[in-house]
Length: 467
Image 1 (cartoon, rainbow, N blue to C red):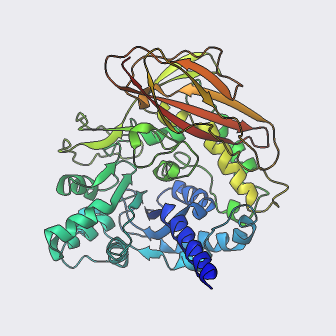
Image 2: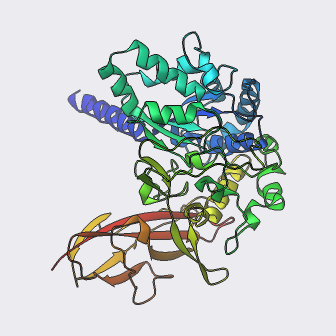
Image 3: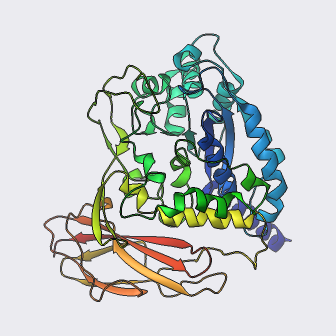
């Protein structure tokens, strides 16, 4: 009997740990303002087994000031209902459509701060407060695809109905990523609640925003994977009913998707550390320089904008060497562009999962390290990065690439591998000479030879100390 009780206890503990590892995610979307929200939602649902989805809330924005299109959320989730059993052939944990429908809510159909204040509660803002106030102490990732006044109203009510100590505990749970500023409540949140973790490229004019790396046509990068023809072949046509819910591109493909790309478990992403870089881009914590807004194709008459009053996680630059044209590129869009072919292929495979059997579809490789993910070495010391034992569930052949992610570490120099790191699972490097402890981020990228090709990663952080 004692053995049985012990096994039950271990089983319960294992499942609690598994649940605790999932991130809590809530989406605010001005769906129907632009086709890209529906596109992002289709992708989001194919990864829905990776998260505990706490809310799908229809909101307004500068592009859709008096309509919260909650019916479109239901329509796309209905399509997901048809293909969810097929997804379960490939990975466990996909929630039912019935469960997701309990999370669909509607925000107030008012623009920005017109929807914030006394008597401005909505189904969406009340739900957000309920989720945030639950006994679950895991962070709540709020992905804001449109206006943020639903979140602003929830915060306004928390501030005015709870003690400062109680309110602060709730603020500390929040992890907010907004796609620029799509209403005037977004800057108000940053100014009024300076302790809240906040990722954004601020402003109503989007041209310099990091998230544009998902759909920018950029020299030196694979632009085919964001073309209409690619989307038709790999996402929309001859896949499943969910693919038919992915509309054609109007202004830009999936501008909202970067809010959750770095929440996907792929071995690279470290969501709590935006400066590490990942599929959703890389961001640094600082007060950005104020740039006077100018009209653009998205917002003809810019909203009034003011300088930031607090540090936020915002635009950072990466330098990337392109294998397509053998040139180097530097900028904040590059922090997303460098991964774009990988995450587009990954999405294409997830869409294959909506209608193909396990044997017919590709699945990601499983990288393995033969040492810890954090290592300390002395200047001049030789160390081997080793990924022996990496496997692929489909038995595909694998390619290996090791590279230094220079911007993610504190060491400013470049590390040269000898021999070259391509196509070797085990590579040596010699620690550079340092005067104080420095960190170097090495990324292992493992890519299979399935169709489409899938990549997974391991990050090794090496701390080099003086000899």
